[in-house]
Each structure stands twice: as structure tokens, then as C-alpha cells.
Image (cartoon, rainbow, N blue to C red; front, side, top):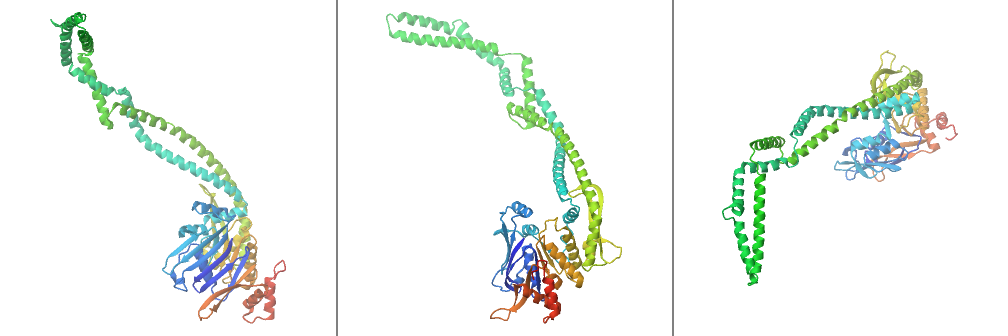
Length: 559
């Protein structure tokens, strides 16, 4: 709900503050007094672009600020959270236009872009001006209307939740399916790579060990010759070294009784002999391990060639890396093997969702079709009463097989404005004033069921008078019982129905001849006077005054 509008340094308004009533507010005044300028300022709050041409004082910035009560506005608060803005009980929207031409927008003192401002403010205010087609062109609004009169808003809400789940699952299925198709192109090749590695049957560090072994086999003769020479010198020569050392050891040991110092030399000699005997034994053992088998040499060469080919193919360096690749390929193939089952389960869920959606959509369509004739008749009766006697509104509901966010129906609001038999989309067939009145009729019939933003009607009374104007006033008054309404009007029949009456006029500023827009809230007697002047001119007759008094008299007796 719009609580307050503050305007400063805008067009011919130096400073104005409007405190609105939660029901029906009317704004009247002479032509050119500034009523439309107030709407122009409000349009800045709705996200329209601005320029410095609106500045009265070129040395000061222009400010337009609106205060809304938004504590219970769930849709608006969700948008605030989505825009990462604080949720407050009251929301202050401000626009500033600097003399340099820069325009800024704020929501609760946080800077926002015009696109964010436009999105958020559209939930708070709906402005109806001539040729303003926003609402009637919104398919969501048209379905809101039909479901309000068919009493299927809750059923449609349930349908839309189901539909969102269906769309999410369908999107997931499509992404998985595309991924699976792309993967399948790679799967065969990866399976081939895996099988190739499995057939190689490599063991940890096998290639590195085989390379060392092969190098040894390639020098087997040299190794055997050297080992044999060492062993021969130590153990099997004509005078083996170890035998000579034993004799030397015996000589030293024989001196220990007469030369105690020889005992230490004997111990050292014994240690050397033991070490050389151990060396001889190990050289013999190594000779036994060195193989001269050409078949073994060929087998090792083949394993190494196969391993190096795999290393080069995959750009790797070690046996360990090849085994890690084998494990990775196996894991990837195992993981993807479950996608087929996942797709099958998801398809089953989607089929069940679609079946339920079509059932609910069929129920919606049935109730909508039943409610349409009565609703059409009600609107057409209202149109005749508000100055459109030749207009005929037709609402078409066409069943289709396509599921969409509103069901399976295609909905169109058509108008024949002149009994021509030619029905066209309402936004094409209706004039600006007619479109505003059609919207008024629609919203008056759905006021109890729909949550609507603040409704602002400008020039809704264009081209009507008398009883038609009276009926427009009554519709606005009824609408104001459920939603906040602001109406700029030239008609006394409409002005008399307001719960709060703003009067806009022009006067010269103090100490200057410059004309400025002024505004005051009328009390009961002032309302009678102003409305009487709207009926009979600046000097209204007694009859005009009594007529005006009757117009502002409410069912509660308040004038």
C-alpha cells in the first residue's frame, strides 16, 4: 500500500507531500494544475527514465520519494530477497535527478538499477493511463482473472508447483540425456583403452625392474667373467688368496705367546679373512643368479617394448602412472553405467508428473469453461453501464495438448467495440480510455479474490458523463473496499466516491511571480464546494451544491 509520496523540485512542483488513504483516493484540479505532473513523478518510482528538463531549480537535485507498507506483501518481499535487499515493514523508494543529469534510484537507501526498480515497483503499483497496455498484455494477469472468477486460484497454484517440478525434472533428464549421448561417443574408446591396459597386466614397478634386468642380461658374459675372476683369485687359483691369508694368520697367532703385540694383528687378519671369504661366497651366488637364457632375454624385451609403447601413447612416464590411468578409466566407466538406470527412473517420474498435470489441467479447464459465460455477461453488462453500450467482450478458451505454466488452455480476451462482428485482441480494439474502463470492470469483478497492487487510474473518465460516470465512480468505490485506489478525475460523479480528496491548484510562490503547483486535502465542506464547482462552474447554484452534497454522502452518513 502506498502511504506517502514526496516530490521536490520537479516540473512546476517545488515541494509536495501526499499522504494516501488505504481505500479510494481522488485527485482533482483544473486542467494544467499539475495532476499529471504528480503521476509523472510517480512514474520515476516505477522505474521510468528521467532527465534534467524536470528541474525547476537547476542548482538543486530533484527528489521523488514513496513510502509503501510492505510487511504482508509476500511477493514483493521475495523479490527483495532475490535482489539481495533488506526486507522491512515499510519500503522507501527514492529517485534523485542531479543538475548534471545523473539519475539514481534507491530502495531503503540501497542503490539499485532501473531494471531492478522496475521489477520491484511493478508489484507495488499498477498505473492505468491511456494506451498503457501492460496489464492486459500479461498472460499471467488474464489467467489470474479467469481463475479468480472460476474459484480455481488454489488449484492453479498447486498445478504451477507441479509444473515447476515437472520442468525441473525434464530439464535434468535432457541434460543427463545429452551428457549420456556425448559420453557414449567416448565410452567405446575408453573401454578399448581399459582393455588394452588390462591385457598388459602390469605389476607395480614392472617396467623399471625389467629394464634393469634386461640391462644385466645384456652384459651377462662380462658379469660372469668378472665374478669368476674374483672367485678364482680368492678360492680356486693355484695359490688362492684366502689360503695364503690363513697361513699368514697361523704365523701371527703362533707369535702371541712371545710377542703380545702380534695378537692384535692376528685379530685384524682374521677379520679380513672372514670378509674375503664372505665376498667369495657372494660372488659365487651372483654367478648363479645371472641367467644366459636367450628366451628370457626376448621375453623381457617384449614386455618392455609393450610398456614403453603404452607410456608414449598416454604421455606417461612410469608403470605406476599407467596403473593409475587403468584405475581411473575403470572408475569412470563404472560411474557412467548408473546413468542409464537414472534416466529410466527419471523418465518414469516425468511420465507420472505429466499424467497428474494433465488431470489437474483438465479440472482447471472444466471450471474455467463453466465460469466464462457468466463472467462475460457480467463484464458486458458493466461496460454498457459505464459508457460502452456498443462494446462486446468475448473470452476464448481453447484446449490444447501442450502443457504450460497455466495448464493446457489458450486464453484470449477479444473485443468488438462497435457491434461490427469483428473481434480483435482487446489491446488492439480498445481506445486508451476504453481500455482503462475495461480493466476497471475486470478488477471490480475480481477484487475479492485477487491480491492487487495500488491501482492508479488516470483519465479513466475520458468521453463519459451522466449515469456512465456515476457507474464508474461506484465501481472505483467498490474496488477501493478491497484494494488501494488512486484516481485522477474531472468528473464530480467519480470525485464524490473518494474516501480522501486531494485538490491540486496553481499559485504564485511567495515573493515571486513564478507559478507553482500546490495541493491540499479537502475536508467535508470543501469537498462539497469543489465538487459543486465541477458540476456548475466557479459560482455553483444551490442545486449544484445540494447535488454535490448528495454525491459525497456515504452509506455511513459521512459527508
